[in-house]
Image (cartoon, rainbow over all chains, first blue to last red; front, side):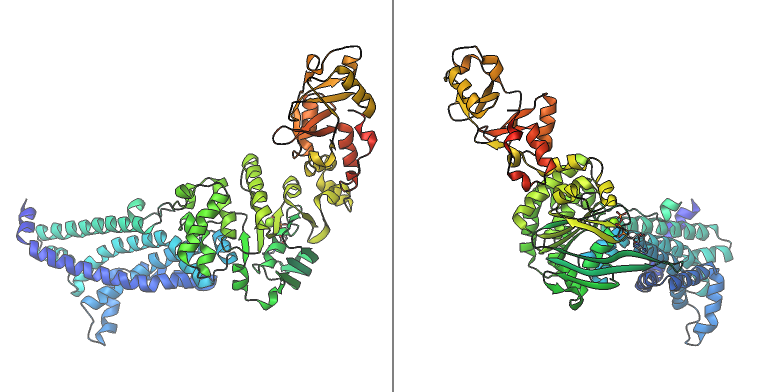
Length: 225
Length: 384
Ligand SMILES: Nc1ncnc2c1ncn2[C@@H]1O[C@H](COP(=O)(O)OP(=O)(O)OP(=O)(O)O)[C@@H](O)[C@H]1O
Ligand SMILES: [Mg+2]
């Protein structure tokens, strides 16, 4: 009850921090798609490169976020950005690489060899094959990777409050330091809500981007449970 | 025209060994003909086919397509100028049927409205309603429908040469026969030069102008279906074609190839005396009764009317069965067995009496190759 009152009184702050939160995750995921998808496609050309890249991305994802933030402080301090927005975006960008690269790589390399042969046999160049057949077929699976990355990083961004990146995590951090359950619950609640809403939005988007009947529905975070 | 000269392919296997998938293959498919590449699994049919459009790099030898040496052409351009049907159909699931059909025209930069109109026409050619199918996705089609689309996709840019790798492999026998017939009908108009891979002998006999039989990468025999069945070059080919290869030739010949045309006939109102006279004159034991305009109506058997008098119409018997002059001998023989008879009356599409066919004439035709059998001997007419 107290929490509801708190929420009611602080709607403007909640909105502001939600926007901060979304802008960190949104910008980082956008950049992650721009880097991860081409990397995922490129590594389909070379099995050895693929295993190295996927291995590195897997290692990055195992670094605890607090440790990663800590690691970046001395490095980014060199350009005066040791704390705040930039390290948060970079962390999310790095954590997103694995799901996005891996899903892109898997999707492209799992395109039915018969389709690839048909495309080649009908006279498509490698880049036409990629644009007209392989990428369209990979989109649902890539989107599933994006969904995993988004949901995972909404949680990670909450921790970025500790390095002064703002966002909904500020409620949680203050709730803990001030022993204020109202702030703590508000933060947790809105982080969860944001994750759920984003996931549904992306699921909707994924369906829209999937041709009517190529029904290769890939497992996203909500199906993984 | 497709011409192969000493074409070879050696695959290096990971173990350090090598597989000779095609061994000095030389053959030529003339303009407008269907050549079926036939042979047991692993004999190199697909490899040979894919070397033609460069999907598999040849090890040595020469290939000409439509008069041009393929070594001197850009492989991508070459493939766009050759229709290709892959065994697994390979329709792109992310594109509508219309876009699938228009893949090559789009790659060639053709006018979209024109190519889309052609897609509709091609669908009609294979009995699919464009109104229903153009905007559908491949998954919404049955296997047979997809296979038809796979074939017309290869035809969309009107290439002179077509490569087909077991194009009708993935469907049930009944639908396969239907598609084969449709395709042959199309081919009589389109006159494409076609290399067609199959491992089904009956399909090969039905579709081919010429059959190329492969074994372990070697082209063992290259002949017309009839010559192949009549004179297999070696034991391998003979056993591959099967013990019943003589019977298979039945489906290569039409009734009109072996029937006796211009037979004597009587009308309903003729006297039996006239019928007897005609039968004795030509030495037959049966005579066909025709209607006023020449349709086959019934027949008389000499022994039944030896002592009878009156008109034909009072004594004739109905015909147990007739065959169309364009049926193949296989269905003629089947009818003979079903009705326990040694001869059948042959009619055209309107039912007009065209001649008769006997078991003797059929076995005679099988004994000779069918070119020789054009000179039918009198002996074969005995059963009439
Ligand atoms: N990429 C490859 N690497 C190594 N060997 C190959 C390769 N492709 C084919 N072969 C071998 O070449 C031979 C001919 O293969 P091919 O696919 O042409 O046979 P096929 O006549 O089409 O058989 P099927 O009727 O089973 O399709 C086989 O022994 C096969 O194992
Ligand atoms: Mg094959």
